[in-house]
Image 1 (tube, rainbow, N blue to C red):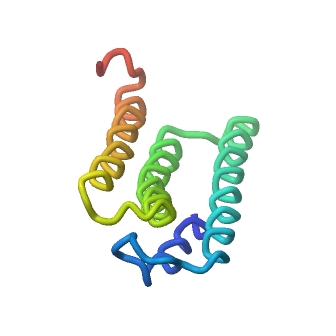
Image 2: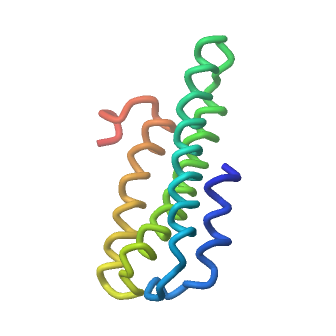
Amino acid sequence: MLFALSNIFVLLPDMTFTQNLPRWTFIYMAFTNFAYQTLDAVDGLHARAIKASSPLGQLFDHGIDALLHGVMGCALMSAMKLGAGLLAFVYFHSLVVTSVPTLAHVLHGTLADVL
């Protein structure tokens, strides 16, 4: 989580998503996002393997994932120089829409009952 949240500090100079950032920022963001996704996948597998998983842990994990998808979305918007226009609005809200089914699955147990 700390890896992905550190992307916020890299993106602070470019809050309009239109400026040219140094190349190292994108290399750094790629490395931290890869590390975050790898460790996020491994911790769930490990918790299930040692039978230490719980519904609260799953809700916490998916909640953090939903938060960090927004941060990663901002990093992608900066990389693509989308600006703060309609395209950026549609892209960012598509991330929110994809997070809602995950939350519904966690809260209700199955996705079919919600939809």
